[in-house]
Length: 88
Image 1 (cartoon, rainbow, N blue to C red):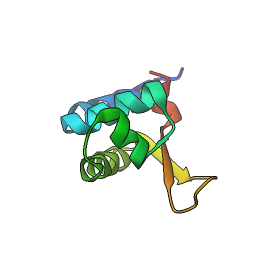
Image 2: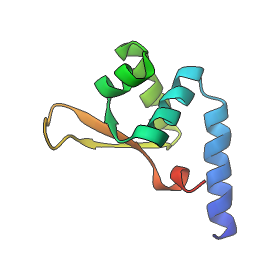
Image 3: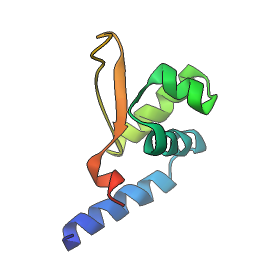
């Protein structure tokens, strides 16, 4: 691993530490159970869907999660951790 990769990961972890607890919980659930939709995240974390939506947007802003359209339902998005975050 290069020094640049390591510093990028440290920055991502540091930014996650500054996030609200709900975002940290969502990141941890995605780490263990991802990829998941917002509804699945809400069920796993026991957080309201509005809180999950805010947490996912916070994680997206700092580059910790990626999303794609669901193959089974194009109206939904599936979230997963970025590759750089998973390597740490």
